Image 1 (cartoon, helix red, strand yellow):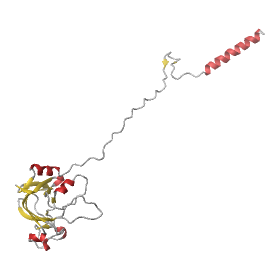
Image 2 (tube, rainbow, N blue to C red; image 1 turned 45 degrees about the horizontal axis):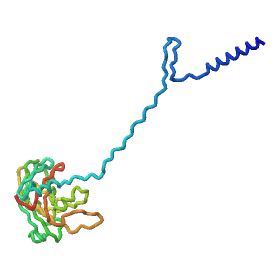
Image 3 (cartoon, rainbow, N blue to C red; image 1 turned 180 degrees about the vertical axis):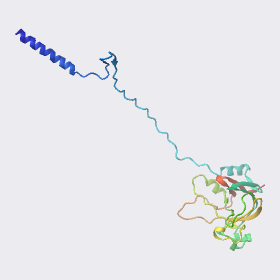
Image 4 (cartoon, rainbow, N blue to C red; image 1 turned 90 degrees about the vertical axis):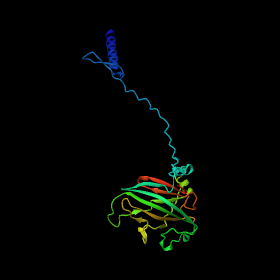
Length: 251
């Protein structure tokens, strides 16, 4: 009986030892290296802290564009804008040009100007006709090469006050086309508005516009040359260069 008790006790001890050997070891507990006796630290990865989230920056899409005529409008008010008789200079590609408005005439009808109707290009109306006398000087520029090498008068654009005020408001502004230019008599079609000056040469030209009839159609036009109030001549150069001349005042 005692012998049997000893056998059972031995079997129980072996069972406990086996269970102990199968017990899993925690991964973050140090393990002793059997060869060196040093502890090998096995550490479980630490989850990253959640990143702070911030509200996205809201950029307003309704940014009002700067009115390109703001300087001209303020210049009219304080008298600093160029006037009739003043000379403005602009660069056009490889050419430097000067423009001086010498005279401004406004007729109730283009027939009152004495210009034959056959010499008008297009854009005629039964409303007032504005005729400018402009001295143009080519300060410097290339030599003439062929008949296709010409200067162009269409960098002169006529605006009234309502057109200038509407510019920069994302509104549609109809710029009038030149309906009369005496720089190249007899020119037709695509040749209208072309002329030529040698470097250092100057000449006086007549340039005219008609006040528009009311514009109708599917496209909404917010402003056009509907009257002669606050007339300003815009002279365009290269890369957005613009000069303005107040046609209502003289030097």
